Amino acid sequence: DRHKIFEWSNRMIGADDPEYGAIGGEDAMSASMELYMYAQSLADSRRERPLDDIVTALITADLDGEKLSDIEFNVFVLLLSVAGNETTRNLISGGMHALMEHPEQLERLKADLPGLMETAVDEMLRFVTPVMYFRRTATEDTELRGVQIKKGEMVTIWYGSANRDEEIFANPHVFDVGRTPNEHIAFGGRGPHYCLGASLAKMEIRVMFEEILTRIPNITRSGEIVRLQSNLINGVKHLPVRNG
Image (cartoon, rainbow, N blue to C red; front, side, top):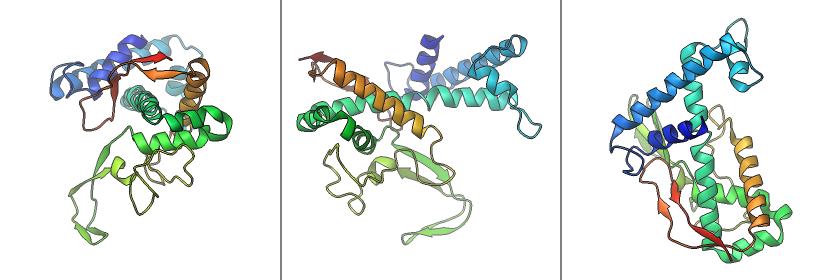
């Protein structure tokens, strides 16, 4: 089923990209509904025949006598399939592109994978920033750095801008795999809205780059990068490479 999930995910985040479907929100909504119904069929199947998997664990989990409703489970599957997939895979592609565009940093990282991988992952998250913005609605009147925000007004945070803030980062437009400290907000700000999957994502990124740079040490770009047409996801659709 992974191919279907991958297609749905592409259509959901690629609503503005002609390669992934019809331009506009209708195809993205259609993909969302198809994935939603797929999640419902998964839940129905596991209730009838439980397995040792995450679906069974989620639908049978009991917290203070309450279980996930069908709506909660189905929406969680949407979140897991898209937020847990698009962000990490586009960071890996974008991070690889950043390394190849900065060969001195690539060589520096290859020379000390154990010592630099952790800071390199954070720098790729800062420099690439796979999620470009989020929007929220103010629940009360407030003021932010001299700007008045009224209750009900919509506000966006542009993560890429924040991750290159000259007040926070020295030489913010420089890609430095050894950068420290690195207080990027690629996973959101601190507090209750910090990404639940941050630790898993960083582990996946670390393992992927350890394997790529060990198995394909002379990786170079063999064609032009093709980016996703989106103002939400800083995505990479195609990145041709070769070994040497």
